Image 1 (cartoon, rainbow, N blue to C red):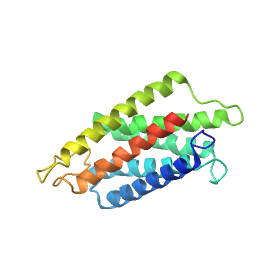
Image 2: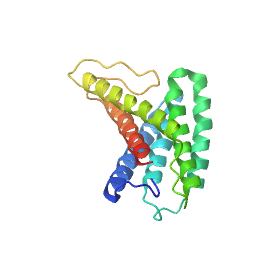
Image 3: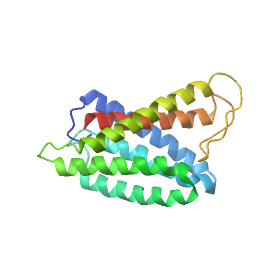
Image 4: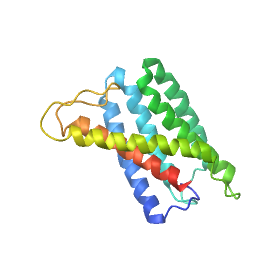
Length: 185
């Protein structure tokens, strides 16, 4: 995150991971049907937005105010997705978390603020659980050539080891990236 205590090498690795995830989500969004495209587009914004936020301070042409505007828009999009069911709530949590981090960055410029400990702590607990659960699901889904159920938000299906597992891995990568950025606050 801009101005965080995250080591430079780790920051660039996070940029690469999030950008690659955003790129995969973009390809998935392009071939998604109308019903699942909204969630995939939300993941594109999150992947590329997380990559932009992880760029070390002073390198990117954007500031926290631009990131706040982008994630404010992503929050509105996530609220719109909720009309399709509560299973889209994760998109809302992610968008709000990114907007929160951008706001903390904007308010902390030159002041060293890192956000509210209670909010940051709650988000850390949420994303730690998300990563642990997502990792467990990925491990149990990839154990053989048995069918994998289609996710409620259209996140893929097919056979184990197929596109559904790659989508789960990308979501796990974004959750891990979010956890890393929150820890850097």
